[in-house]
Length: 300
View 1 (spheres, helix red, strand yellow):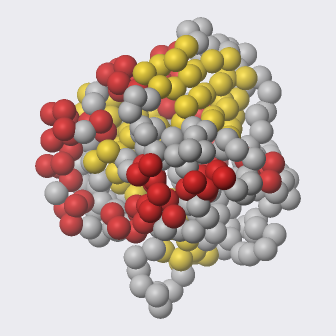
View 2: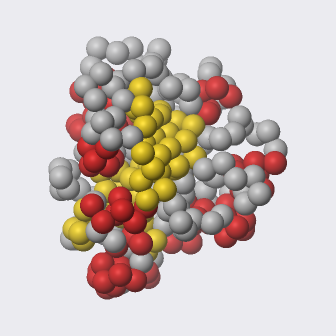
């Protein structure tokens, strides 16, 4: 059930890049079988635009490869992503190990241009390719009493040098409430700029939840468990005072050590003015109702 959500961002909003200018050609090639991001029924968006490929792929956090922004791009080539499967278990009708190729053969791949806001107060605009998480969960059969979706990243210290250090309690884990997981904005990304998603950005399959801080969008997923209990999340375990379970982008709730009222947009130059951060990263119209009646200073 693709196309539940319509994009309002355009090419002018995305970070400029030569690759993106040829995106339709790239997507067409991928759909013909040249890349995993195009496996499945192609449903690329029209008139959408993004931050440069270089910025997106060389400035990111993926602590399993190291804590410096360029560590992921330096070391992620060591990660083996084929074959790949995702275990889906817990409160589903059809638990099991789902091969990546089998998943993609049943999914509709769309282009989604989303704002991406890091909790460190930098941002970019990313042209993802992927499918809605709801479609994958429905493939496994969501049971009515499931309340949360728990996610787990691959755990391979031999391929991920950052895991040799106890920066976090490995493996990286994340979680969403079921209404967040089933929301049309929530996707499983398989590509960027119409190409397979690079290892440093979470290949071959990562979560993207555009109204939450970036660390909620867990990378290189190997397991999804539906449960009736709120699951632990890595950053909440590491610093519960600083990183809540929800982690919605909220300019009115600062991080204890810095303001979240504004952000530095990557690719706009060293002396560019910071821009105001938008509530729910600009997706308030779509998701604010999910949190109606909640004290967002308590449920941060």
